Amino acid sequence: MKQFLLFGFLTIFSGFFAYGFQNNTSISASPIQTKQSTEQSDKQNKPTVLAELYTAERCPNCPPADRNLAFFDKEQPFQQAEIITLALHVDYSNFDTRKDKFSSPIFSRRQDIYAQKFRINSIFTPQMVVDGEFQFAGGNLEKAQKAIIEAAKTQKAKVEIVRGEDKFNIKISELPKHENATVFLAIAEDGLGSNIYGTENTVAKREYTSVLRELKSLGMLGTQQNNLEIETIMQYQPSWKKENLKFIVFVQENMSRKILGVSRINLS
Image (cartoon, rainbow, N blue to C red; front, top):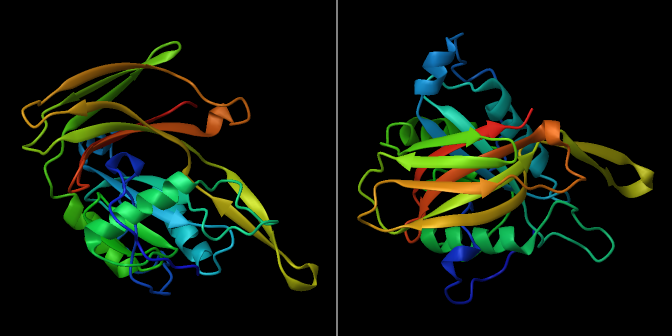
């Protein structure tokens, strides 16, 4: 994996996400305390937790972590929390002729900022960050479980997303005591994949969940501001499949990188 040193402080706007300690332990469903069937009202009352995975097509250790993220998203295996997932494909594993079509240098810079928060001098994939507070290798089930359960104990803001014909109305309220923070809108797409060509014309198929397509700032919250209402136009690229898209809104402290609240809405 390509590693590089951090040089100076990168701008806060450039990102927020994960790093991790290298760990090749892969996740399986068996050790997890799986969820029980619950009513929709119970699901809505669950604390929401944001799990962000840094991954790359050319990363040989990433497939188990990619599957773990999909498992968290689809199965919601923890009774204590609803997990909202994002997969960020970094660009530092790209070759001139073999580029990850989902990658972006913006995501790599965001990973750098998380590395500064956690005081490490290099980054790698797969890495996962939970609620901006916990970091670990994406294939480490034990750390993922502990981080998600711990993050669910933290008081969160209420984030409501109301969909109109061609726009969203976003209401943020009940914010706990906080630093200056930014409201982000993330557009993610499910059902994506790629073929990775190896030696002797071998092909490995990769499938991805919650691939981050776009991330932008919607507004700011000062330390004394406990609520905010924003209206934003629903926009996405024609090549993205509408039925697979989800819009995720989260509030994140600028300096600590702590997630103050998160919610999502699917277009299908």
